[in-house]
Image 1 (cartoon, rainbow, N blue to C red):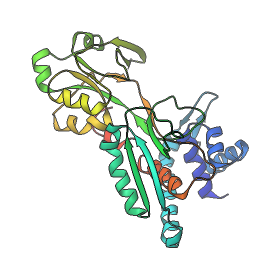
Image 2: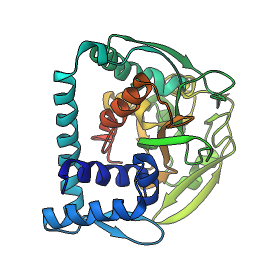
Image 3: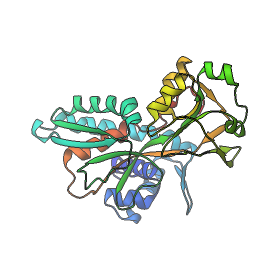
Length: 303
């Protein structure tokens, strides 16, 4: 068995959510993907995934194996980079679209690390709080926070995007602290113009709940809403990748920890796998590796 390829298949199945998606991504048939998984399980000596017709879930052994497979694949990539001739390094220009909040909070640091590894690549970053047309606007790669990606596009999962309900200590001191999600209807809620403008969706004890909200500030990007929350204007639902540092510092207080706002998927989206330039392929692989596993920004938040 080619154990490295088996690990690559396993990681792809987990990241993409299904064997068929992994097969398409890797250019393999579904039976070959299944055989790689079975052989990897034989080698490890444990079942790695529970397979149903609806979804895949990792077993305890799978959760232990996944980060080690990622590490092995990363080491293999580093080895290839170490011996590759300089002329083989990715070169060229990439146009990348991303939301302002994720771009400033997380992606810029990731791009800086990528450019240090591949200095021959030039990145033009478009921070736009709208869904761009990749073809019409000549975008090579879009980083999108959504669970509904156009099926005509290729999407590789980077991470999960969770949200938190939060407010400043000053606001809570003046207006009180909501004890249950229904209390949000009585507060000044700072809303996003495109996401959950009038309804905030939660899961509370495995029950889906939608709460009507309203307030006197709405904006089309999350950075503005966070600034308003820090100023003590109201309660905001913010992506954890953006709000985590303010919560850890005490500038914002996380509210209603028993209620989970709807989770979305953070994906790298591009138009086609065919004839991908080395710069695009290496960028996508780099971001998948960097953001793999549980988001670092969620650590310590109790999410």
